[in-house]
Amino acid sequence: MLSQDMLDRLEQLRLHIHGKAQGGGGGTRASRVRGVSAEFSDYRDYAPGDDIRRIDWNAYARLDRLYLKQFMEEQENICHILLDCSRSMEDKWQNALETAEALAYLALLAGDRVRIVCLRGKETRPGPLYHTRRSFEQVCAYLESCACDGKDGVEAGVLALRELPRGMSLLISDCLQPVSMDRSLKWLQFMRQETVLIQILADAEVHPELEGHLNLVDSESGEKMAVTVDRQALEAYLRTLEGFLADTAESCRLREIPRVLLDGGDFHEKMLSGLRAAQLL
Image (cartoon, rainbow, N blue to C red):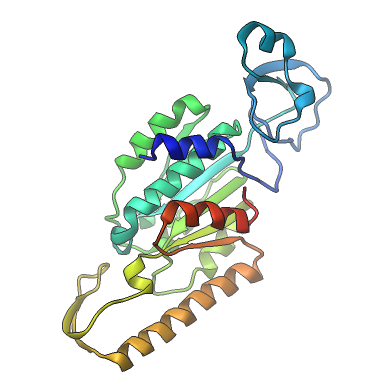
């Protein structure tokens, strides 16, 4: 679970969603459904960047805390966090979980609804729907119950999603599958999702330190292969990796989908800077 220091940092940020909310109530996104009145609905905590004209100063005088008034025509967005649960995610599973937690927390802070979807091929089923920041502990508990034990790649799981409500889909994956990510991204857009790809790689995948005679094991299939790693082999691997990352970036560019690449190191800092670079914060 994310540390309290990290949660405090997230409190100062807002998840930026370009699209409009589609339904529900009590959120902070502008809705496609036009309101017919400014009827008061509820309060929520003030967050930096909110319109200070909507602060209830009477509540502040009584409670010494800033609250914003919400109105009936404001509706929340649905944020789907799609988590790649294939076996290749094992070495970066903790980073994937913490990324999902951070995104869920940001969405809940904004008053949006959150749903975690563990991608497990044809067995993929959307998880519960969470609303309000008080449900964050439930989100964390649900994520802790997830495991990277899926046999199928991302594509089978994404294509199994047939009835996603219009909203935002944040796809967390290493993108290591036999086929490109293009079909998965295309399907999410067809499902009217504002899609973001967050690609997570292990530091050892980006900066391998291998040498000599080795037995490599495919994390997905369990297939073993005897190889000899020398300078020439490492150079060939790095060229292949560069091509793989370039292809993934190009698929996202052609579909105008933001892509955040996280590849080890100071993970939390890279996550925040990557989300900012993609204009999601």
